[in-house]
Length: 503
Ligand code: NDP
Image 1: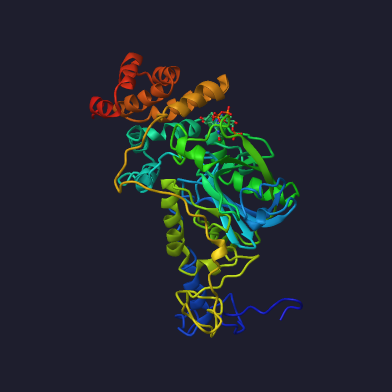
Image 2 (image 1 turned 90 degrees about the vertical axis):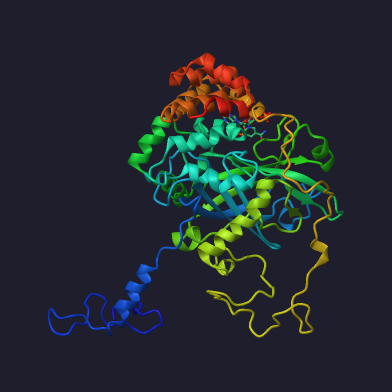
C-alpha cells in the first residue's frame, strides 16, 4: 500500500486488490461473474442520477450566515431574530427555472433565490425568486404554465407559440412578463440580483399579535444585468458562468452579501387595502409599506461536494419556525404542499435526514419511523406512538400561531380586481424604468414574441397596450403589427379579445 494513502475498499469496507483490470478466464477471455468490485462499481454508476427537479434544475449554492442588524422583536418571537448581532448559519441556492440541469445560466428566466436558515427552533426556508411577483396567482395553473416554458411535446424544442399562447390567455402574468423581459430577466450573476419572498408571510409575537411581512434581500454588490446580446453570447461561451462566478468569488474571499429588509402590513391594513395583498402577481407599493432594515446575509463558504450539498438541498416554503407562519396567499398554500412532495419523490421520504437538510442548531424528535434510506438510528428503542408513558417528545402549546379570522363561502371565487392586473406593469414601465430600460424591454420582447404566430402576437401585444399605450404601440411597431388593430384589441374584454384572435 502506498504510504499515507487509504486503501481502496468496496462499499462494505473490504479492501480492493485491483481497480484497473478485470479477472477473466484466460486471455483475452470472458469476464468472470466473481468480479464483485466491478459489478458493484458499475451498478452504482448506473444509479448515480436522481430525478432532476422539474423546475429550478440548474443551480449553484453556498454556505454563510445571517446577522440581525435591527430589532424587530415587537413583531416576531422567532428566536433567530431575537437580538441585534445574533448570527444564524444559512445555506443559499440560486437557480434558473425552466432549463434542464445542463442549461445555460444566462437564460432569460426568473432566478430562484432559496435560503435555509438553520435556527435553534428548526429550519426556516425562504424560498423566493429574484422578482417580487409571479406569473399566476392560483397554483392550479402551475403545471400548465411550466409546460409552456419547457419543450414542445412533438418537436422537443422550446416553442414561442406555447410560451406566448399561455401568457396571452393568462393576463395576470403581465407584471412578471414585464420584469422578465427587462434586463432583470438576465442577471449578470447570482451575486448581482435581489431576492424576494414574493408572498406575504405571517410574523407573530408572544402576545398573540400578528402582522404580514414580505422579505426583500437587496444585493450589496448592486444590481447588474446582461443585455440580451450579452446573455446570448455568454450562453455559448460559458453556460455555467454564474455557477463559476459565485464559486470563484467565495474562493477568493469576496463572498457576496445581501441587506435583508421587510415590509410590514397590519391585519387591519390588509383587510381594507385597495387590492388583495395576498395576490402574488402584485407588489406592496413602497409608498404604502416602506421597507425596514432587518439584517444582512453573507455567503462565505463553498460546498465541498456539489451533489451532497447543492443537488440534495431541499427547500420548502412550508418550513416555518415559531414566530412565523403562512398567509392566505393561494400560491403559497399550493407550494406548501408541492415542495415537500417534490422532495419526497426526488430524494425519498427521509430526505430531511440528509446533512444539508437536517436541522443543525436544533434536533428532530418525533414519531415518524422507517421508510427508504432511514439512515439515522430510526429513534432507537424509544416509543413510536403518541401519547405515551415512556418519556417520548410532547408538543409545546407555546409555539402555536395566533388564531386569525377567516370566513366565506366555499366556492371558486373570481378575483376582486380593484387594481386590475395592468396597473403595476404600467407603473413599472412608465415610472420606474429608464428610457434605456424601456428600449431593451421592447427589443427583448420583439425578438422573442416575433417568433410566435400572428394571432398570438396580436393577443399578447394588446395586453402590453393595456398596461401602457406606448408599451403596446412600440411592441406592435417592432413586430410589424397594425397598431390600430392592437389598440382595438386592448380595449376589449379578455373574453372578446380571445374570440377576436381565434386561430
Ligand atoms: P417605487 O418607485 O417605490 O419602487 C420601485 C422599485 O422598483 C425600486 O425600488 C426597485 O426595487 C425596483 N426597480 C427599479 N428598477 C427596476 C427595473 N428596471 N425592473 C424592475 N424593478 C425595478 O415604486 P412602487 O413600490 O410603487 O413599485 C412600482 C413598481 O416597481 C411596481 O409595480 C413593481 O413593478 C416594481 N417593484 C416594486 C417593488 C416593491 O416591493 N414595491 C420591488 C421591485 C420592483 P428593488 O430595490 O427591489 O430593486
